[in-house]
Amino acid sequence: MYSVLFQRKVAAWLFACAAPIALPLTHGTSAAELRFDPVTAKAPPRVAQASIELLAKPLASGNTVLRVQFADRRSDAPVVIQGGLGLTALRDDGVAPDEKAGDGHYAAFVNVNVDQLAKERERRLGLARRVKDAPVFFMRELHGFEPFQPNRSMKLEPGVASILDKFHGIPLTVDPARELVITDTLVVEDPARTYDACTGVGTQLGPWTFGKLMTEIANEPVTGINPADLVEHWINQWKSDLPINGFTVQNRAVGAQRVLDAWPRMLDGRLDLAQAPFRLLAIVNRLDLRGATLYGSSDAGEGRLVFGALNCLQPQPGQPILPQAMPFTVIFEYGVVKTGCFQVREWAQQWHALGSLVIGSATYNAALQAITDQFTLRDANPARLPNRSAINQVRTNEFALATTPADTFWELRESKLRTSGAASGLLEHDTVAQTPDKSKQFTSVLRNFVNMNEADVLNGTHEVLLEFPAAGSPFRGGHIEPGAGFAWDASGILNLEARHRFSLATCNGCHTAETKTAFLHIHPRNAGSAAELSDFLTGLNMPKTDPVNGASRTFHELLDRQQKLDLTANMSCIKPIDFPLEEIFFDPVPPVFAH
Image (tube, rainbow, N blue to C red):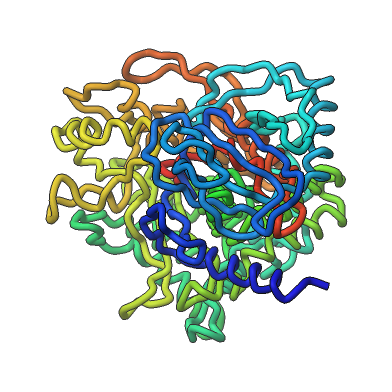
């Protein structure tokens, strides 16, 4: 039975984790005043070296001393971390357990799970007998491989400091086809969970159908919004010129109407969501987008379902012949909220457990649905009003809606639920993440943004602002037309590596020129066939050539995600009171990469 004191500590910890505001710390800050810094949760400071030292006699604040040297020179202000038993501060002010003020060596008492750490160390040593090197990624690029040599002599003994391995995970333990990007037709054509409007096979409004997802997002019992009305309102956004952030997004009315004309309706005139003309392409685990629980993140990344639009009608005389699997993908991107190392580890293990099951079997598909239900069902995020949905955004990538042959360009858009106003609870088109309006290409405005933010661009922490260079000067776009694909550039950009990283972080840069991708990372598919994946994901046909300076660039996105899943699923925090030890060297996907 836990003591009353312990229960109070856990309650205080949970309260502190929920606090969204970071307070400035001073040497005199008390434990009750500690707050996480939300910036470090997604962009933690890099650690050069860390060690732990077991205490001969555990204290109320922990059983171990953690010592950290950051890669950059910092002020001696404390850094708030999750110590396991609660919030604590890494200090460099000479206050115990720190030994000397201002020497760049930070220290804190933390609560390490010694037994689980020993098991994880044995696992790594076992892997080292099979694995000689591990990939090194930076800014989503594969920079090579380094020897995998876990510390064989590390043994926790009181009074002895043990250097921690800079461990980032071992990819071979993760099967990407079963745990990360699931495209197997035995899954995406599971007749109990999917429905194909063209073949008529499956279960209408099954848990992995387009219509079911939109129904859950609408959450009619709470919002009063009919899900068919939500969907038609969303599609109608393409039928009019839209003012978004000061730019006019041109309509694609003919193509949008074509989609509506081909969509069966019910007796009341509403779209029949049970026969939605969209085919499931993939179910995707984006745990790699999570934040660092060491610094208080409750963001466990995203779960995604990818669909391709269908044309199930036979062409009429005088009408264009369209493929059944249309060049039009829709991605439902759901946020996953998990608090602390213990919850995030358990979430990762649910995905990782899929790797031990036969893909497409009844057991596998049931286990996968048990995962997806946690973010797709209504009320998955009660705090996000008014819909209480976990959906972050819905992204589209298409040229199927082009009006005439003259404007058959690929276009990317992003839609979000409105939280207020007349359209509250409805899905409407919004600005596209991290991407300027196309009119900024080759301009001094783009040049100045990259040059002025060079350090942040190189570190992956810049934000493409709504307005730049000043208020009233719109910058972020309401859509992007990659057309034949282009790399963002402007005369006078001082650092070509900053140019590349800025462009790679945009929607069109990632989908075209910077990765040498033909617009889609997951392709539409015909019934009975699995969706093809891009080289950017699979690492095939590498390296690619930088479109501006000719540098060789190697991408293997799934390999990076494999590493991060292995690391997360095997963290040594098997209880809520355990310190998230592996998070010390965890390298989240930089905040700029929203895709």
